[in-house]
Structures are given as C-alpha cells and as structure tokens.
Length: 255
Image (cartoon, rainbow, N blue to C red):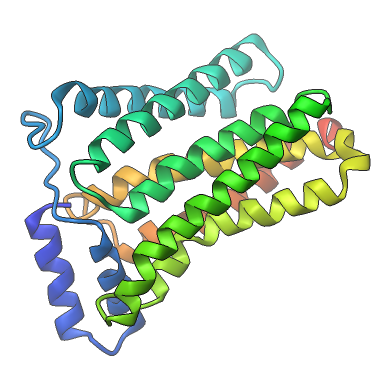
C-alpha cells in the first residue's frame, strides 16, 4: 500500500468517521505503508520479491485455465498442479517478505491459501489413515493461523486503533473453510459423495484469496472501492461455486 493509499484512507476515516465504510477503510491500516514498485524491491530481498510477483501471476493464470478447462482433462490437471505449486511458492516468499514488514491480513491470505489448496487436493485422495491425519493437521494449522491473526488484531481493536469489522471480514473465509472441515469430518461416511464439491469449492476459495491479496495493496492505483476488496470475494466465490456445480452436475449429482 502506497503513502497515497494510506493518506486516502486516513482522509476517509477523518471525513466519514461515523460511517461503516470508513471503519472498513480504517481496518485496512493493518497493512503497512508499502509502495508497489516493480523497479525497486527495497527493502525486500530482490529474489523473493520478484519470485513472489512472477510466480503469483503465473499461478493465477494457471488457476483460470484450470477453472475453464474440462474437469478431469489433462489441461485441468496440469493447470491445477501449477496453481497449487504457485500457491506454495507465493506463501513461502510471502513469509520472507512479511518477516521484513508484517501485514497480518496478508499473512492470513498466504497461509489460508495453502490450507485451502492442500485440503482441496486431499479431498480427491482415497480415505486412508495418512490422508485423514493430514486433513486434521491442516485443520489444526488453520486454527493456529486464525489464533495468530487474532493475537495481532485484538490488541489493536482494544486500543481503538482499528474497528472489529476489518479483522472480522478478513477471517470470514478461514471460518467458512473451517466450518466446511467440520462438516466434512462429521460426514466421513459419505466422503465419496462430498469430495468433488469440496475440491472445487476450496480451489475457488484459494483463487479468490490469491486475487484479493495483491488488490489490497494496489486498489488505490486502480481506483477500486475498499468495500469491493473486502466483500467482493465473499460474493464472487459462492457464485462461482454454484455456476461450476451446475455446469458439471454429473460429477456432483450424489452430493
């Protein structure tokens, strides 16, 4: 987020202090001032910085290919694997970049995307003990991610630095995915009927997370409303899931 972006948000908060939109904008101040400059990675490591951007872009392209290709086709499988690998690389580079300048919402985005893709892939695997243990491991992992974020956000909320709405919206997707895990675990006896929907839904949630994360930093340059950045994915993902479930009814008819 650039200095101009921060100034814009502060102006919104000052001039519209009693509106819900201003509270959301103020919540975004959890992301520190960080101008996006492709020609100058400082203060970050150049390799991590450019790898993050390039691999992230390639991963998003692969995700679009996977979503539009015929499900189960060679292109779908290959693109899905590239997207999954890209998510992992982006998460690793994110941790390196965040070690220099922490941004809690971006930390949640990086780790939750890995969790979403990981559990999406496991959903297609046979229900062996190893797979089930790994799925529970991812579940615990995401709970820890949420706990870490709350440990960062709650003190700021108590201090009045940010309103609760910002962190609440940021945690909405992780909570949706965790609730989905509970449903999946409780209905393990019909795993075969749930696995395709689970795989599809989680890949879509990972995709919208991957799209929202960079937009949260460059939205001001693109003149994108703050509310759209926060609430857009919560509307887009369910719509995409419904569209794809209707497009491939035979694959999910038993759900």
